[in-house]
Image (tube, rainbow, N blue to C red; front, side, top):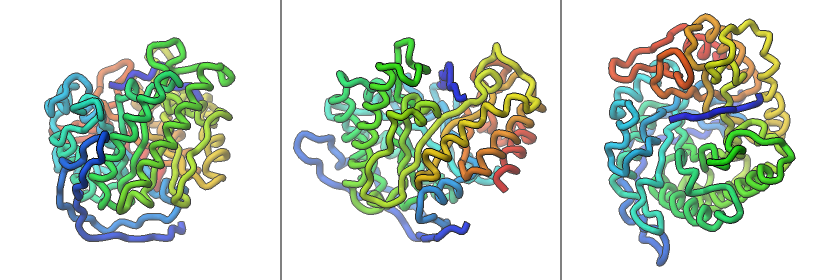
Length: 393
């Protein structure tokens, strides 16, 4: 359940095409580390898809994406039933096929892993790994780019120096297991280190001044976490050596990615890193139900954070992915369509893909970002989706 209170900020493509079957192999665990011998095993056909050889072009090719929100990221149960406990139906192959048919190029599959670990070494429940693997296979067979992350797990990698050791242990453990499980899945499968790591439970959870000591310290801790993530994935086998990887700053906020304290990890693979940001912008239009509902373009300057991201990252060889965006329903469809044209148009012009957050909500008010009605497989707001897709043509 998204609870973002202030996300403020406000081809030539050299292709390497991979085809064939991918299978997750098994590997004995080292002493004292999480057991990966129960990794899910699957057979899946990989449709042909052009894969760029650098992060900037790769990100550009991802275009418009869709989040499978409030599903595998739900955190109210440690059982497989958690997938449906936040009000969404069980994910089917037909649904993911509909995502592709609707025009989306990318799917982000948010997954909360922590509650599905079984011991102090953070061994992932094999049944949960198998279910995630099954959903990833749906996306592979549909010909989508796929982002797989660690979602509502912030308490496991809390960004303070005091809790760093436990966060390091958690990230090493889960990403060792995930990497092993998906080692034969090619670079259409992207790993994202963390979702919105932040100072939860404090008055700096969603925003702090750029020079705030505690906030800057949290960014520096996240930089270290991201390095652990990259090193762990690269230590794996198969496609993990060259897989494209996404990393966020504090809260995945653009202003924190632009903070001088935030640096991209060092990577043994060349041109394979992308920064992940979330931007429900401008906040008073897109998120705040007490804000304004009319979009006349007068606030479009608040979208200039994209230019700043391009300057810091894209111009230096890193891809930029807006992993979550949207404008909540305020009974203002025409204005949301106008906003989408400006937002996605600007992002597309800079080569930045946008991945729509979809939690299924269609009521009027905050946190209503529904686009796909999952059971009948229909689109709630065709005009809004069309505006987004048109920007990426």
